[in-house]
Picture 1 (spheres, rainbow, N blue to C red):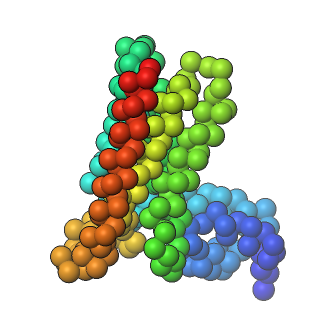
Picture 2 (picture 1 turned 180 degrees about the vertical axis):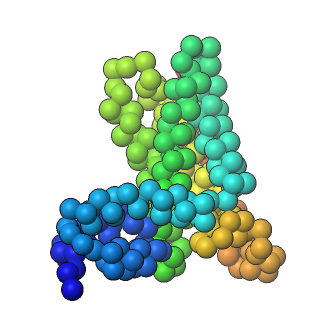
Amino acid sequence: MATPPKPIEHLLGFLIPPACREEVLGDLHERFLSTPRYVMDVLTTIPFVLISRIRRTTDAVVFLMEAIVLFSSYFAAASLLDHNLLTDALGLFRLGLPAGIVLLTLLFADAYANPRNRSPLKPLLGPALGVALAWLSQAVLTGTELTLPRFAMIAGSSLALLLVSVLRLLFAPAINVPAHWQKQSVVSFRIHLSGAALRIAAVAIVIIVLIVYQLGKRN
């Protein structure tokens, strides 16, 4: 019985979300007829698998809260540090660009997250990666009208990283079904996020807000 070449199977397997990788590869393995057809079969199957996974891992309510928090972070930074952004023709788009990049990164990070990974840092990795990609986009767009002033980008990204991380600690992304956080009991919620973590987050938010305020006064 013909089988797909292992190097190609392993390489294409990385494009499939870990939660359903073994099952999908098994089905594609059974349908193998030739290597070119196998590659095409995998590439045409991945979008449907990814959409299905996104639907399972994305809570619409949390996603909306993240979108609001992200845009508000950059909007607040611009209000304090560079008010001209708010009246600029492309100002809102420029503020929404890094926020949108972080939001899309979170969407795909949740879809490709490994359910077996129980690391306590897991909710923080998506926001960190999203902010890093937002900075990369600013570097690519350097010299164009779409970039944000450096201080506004620093302040907005700092607020976004902190607030979204806290939000994702409070409402952990769903693993198998939407609205997973809504089904958690009060007891499990308290175990998941201790009072100490909340106090640390509150202090950090106050510090960042004060720093942004001071930078705004200087400008």
